[in-house]
Amino acid sequence: MFSGTKKEIMATETGMNQNALAKGTVITGDIVSDGDFRIEGTVQGNVKTPGKVVIGKTGIIKGTLTGANADIEGKFSGKLILSDTLSLRSTAYVEGEVEVSKLAVEPGATFNATCTMKGAIKELGNGGQRPPEQQRPKEGQSA
Image (cartoon, rainbow, N blue to C red; front, top):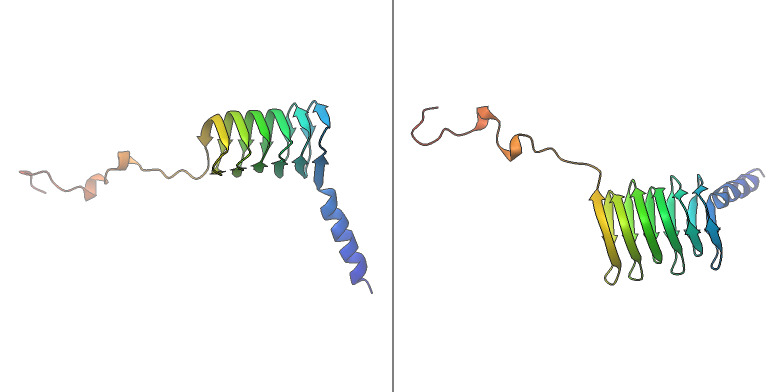
């Protein structure tokens, strides 16, 4: 009896977290949201979300994009700061500055950017040398 109502509420809440900018729509200014985005129009400004941004084939962003993940099929120009993965499809065109943890590029994508890879950095310590207690004595020296 009550399970049907619960499913409807959950579906409604999930649907509200997806934002879309239709083809032909131009926004000049900043967008801040808690939900994911699909952009088929043009944004001239900054987009900030903790989720995923999809720039469709007709989508264009000129500005700064900050988020967790991005999947780009269209055009991006500016500064791109992602905490996780950037996926560039074959039709993607990206120029500017990029800061990501992971990068996936399909053949055919255009990537004219300075790229900084962030994330888990393994420290080598001592320039990759063994600690002094584990180093072998040089020839002619005693241990």
